[in-house]
Amino acid sequence: MAFRQAASKWRAASPSWWSRSPNSAIWLGIALLFSTWFRSTATAALAALALWLVFTIFWPMLSPIVANILAPVDLLNPMTALTQYNLQHDLMQISPATLYAEMLTGILHPSTWELELLFRSQLQGALVGSPLSLGQSLLIVWPDFSGLVAGIVVVFTLAYVSFQRQEGRA
Image 1 (cartoon, rainbow, N blue to C red):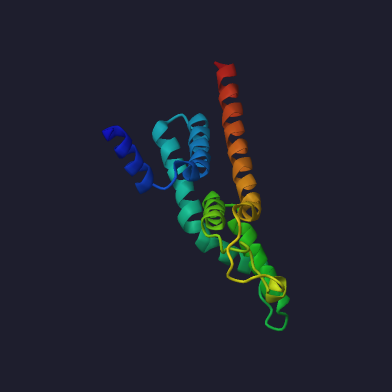
Image 2 (cartoon, one colour):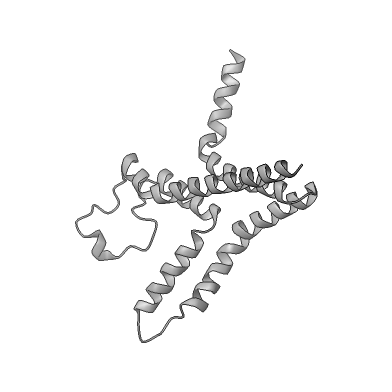
């Protein structure tokens, strides 16, 4: 009886474990990849930590700078601002933390209609303020989820191939 009460309190207190698993899986795959690339355990751990810091903390600051360099805004042409915003959004999609954050925003906040820029003309005929169903929310976040899963598969495949090549030399 006490175990069931403790388990239900634990489930209620912590966010769902399944919601954190895609983000954890990508970083586990990166840690495995670095552990096969580097001989020293400390070097692999520091490299994985450095990559996590870059993608989680520094990438949101760097992507607007890179987008401004690649697609500068012309004050006489408003479409250049839209081009720069789309490039910045695409650059942000490189980070697994951004994919994960957008995925959770779309699922856990049912009034989210779109994860990108949305114009008033696109909302014509929509019931603004009404929440979306779970199926519609899943359709909105499907590109982010599939990108995150594809990244997980690529990182684990690279780690596996790297490990097999090292074992073949021994």
